[in-house]
Image (cartoon, rainbow, N blue to C red):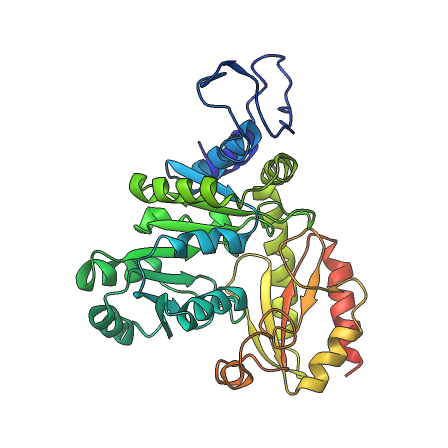
Length: 368
């Protein structure tokens, strides 16, 4: 099936018992068993372990990413933490330097505690990346593409090839939150694990916190499944339902996000009060650099339709200053070195009427 059909139908088959076109939400903590140790259907005993609504969502993310296995967690960060917990003590992680601040924060925490050895690098410098992979032999090679917040595009196939040539035992992890399976399916290029903050585009309505993992590797899935049950960082059934409902329109929303973002990126690119625009050409995320932090702050304050908020990927337009918000936990010296200073504004373009969004942008820039 094409991706749009998968969005509408995967995990959303009509209820077998009643024929309900929208499957019921199994809002239950436990399940009555036929006999002690013999759960109904051979598997449903306790919702931390398995829940029919969560099961549908996990099947959907696997289908969307074109793999066999999916898992749902209580947040994107709990999904990331689950992946890291499968590593042996003193394992090395090689991570793209332009990554979400929360990802870097938890990696550094595990490094401080002596659990992991963490190395950050520019993954678009492929010669240096080859050297690092050869020398470090990392357990995990971790990156986002597009990156957050500078929107760098990383050649997934090339990174996988580097792994194959210099450290075949390494697992490659791609955070696919920004692109979504609509624009790229990393497993098609040999990526082992795909992770999402489903809070963003997959759910799409800023009303749920959820994380998702997809993989085609059965042994890796088994470890993740064990930790999902043992640690219990699971989403509730209603959160799973909301995410499934959001996925139904993912292909339509991503098209609208892209159309609107292109209009705004092209306007900002040609404006004399803007220093740089970072936009990969698809999706709803872009970043813009003004000539100083005062201009950036004034621009953000004067927006009316764009709301100042953390997060991204909802139907409504949001704006943030990463240095003060999503990446504030990073040391100032590192933020400046990476180009994440207070002149940089990250914009999550929603699906409102593009004329209204553009007029709001124009009005805010006119105030500078």
